[in-house]
Length: 136
Length: 293
Ligand SMILES: Nc1ncnc2c1ncn2[C@@H]1O[C@H](COP(=O)(O)OP(=O)(O)OP(=O)(O)O)[C@@H](O)[C@H]1O
Ligand SMILES: [Mg+2]
Image 1 (cartoon, rainbow over the protein chains, first blue to last red):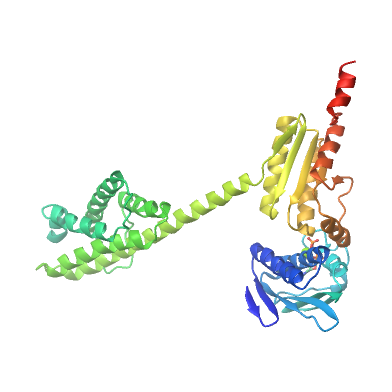
Image 2 (tube, each protein chain N blue to C red; image 1 turned 120 degrees about the horizontal axis):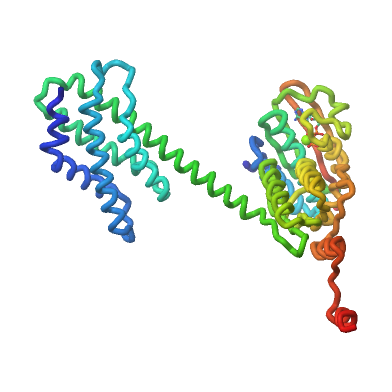
């Protein structure tokens, strides 16, 4: 885990990194003054995305940053990998769709858990950006 | 055939061996509390190793020592060397310890070889190099393997410790889950729970999740599989200890545990489980009233 001026970068390569990533997310959340429920939903979202990276791309990384401005506290997380990409985004975001025998709840669930959700995917680059906001 | 290796093995054995032993002692970690028996044992070990190495040098020298097809290291030498390297690994010493001991012997033998008037140096020098190279490799390999096995064994026992299945009451089991639940851990939890169910003829098992930091889709799916398996054995499951935030998150994720009974606290879960086996916790007074009648 390395610190950047605005937050932290966690390399994702095995299951232990999932724990590191979600712990880092939870800690920054707490530091910025988000409540327990927010900490848990962000940690869970990061857990889902990081697990997908390991499961479908092998390796990747995760950036956890403080994006607060004068009006809002904001924590944003970008999870990125250079894997095969998601063939059909619409399907992947549908509850119950899984190519691995999973519940297929990870991506649609994450989208519902967070305040902002953006996904872009092509062979060689999948990037998912999520954020939680809370007014001061 | 070399007369030098023969000399070192027989007529000059004790002088050279003593030199090596004192080099070993000088390089050994200074444990003031090392029992004398341990030092004595490593002396006999070193002697046996010395003899085996010189026997190998004498008997196993390839006809053409420059041939790349090295002969296999003799079995007894391999065994001795494995023991030589596994012991420091078990004691948590650095791999430098067995290796430097081996290289100390190599330096002594090399010096003798260079000083000897023998004309067969051309074949013996590469042979000595070759043998010690393979011995050094074997030492590293054994050291690494031993450490890996130790670590695997330790994490296995840690994992077992962290998944106790407790018999809470007649036909009621309690499984307090603590920590990260990955695929391997989930499989182990299921196995242990199923075994315990059969062994105790359990009717209810309580899965307490108080110590599980995050319940994401993967953990949820593992739990569902565990619960499905217990259902096949005719046991019902009560889940306890999901935090309010956890419950909220699970709902948002769209995860439902079907007809599994869930209670916020372990206390409420135990009460529920007792009801399922037609028992209940009652105040002493009430019991006296009915029992005394
Ligand atoms: N980073 C990624 N790279 C490539 N494909 C992905 C990636 N993330 C998700 N996918 C694809 O999208 C599908 C849906 O992902 P989602 O996380 O929703 O469900 P899942 O991982 O299959 O199951 P789970 O409910 O356990 O998360 C996956 O099955 C996979 O095919
Ligand atoms: Mg997933």
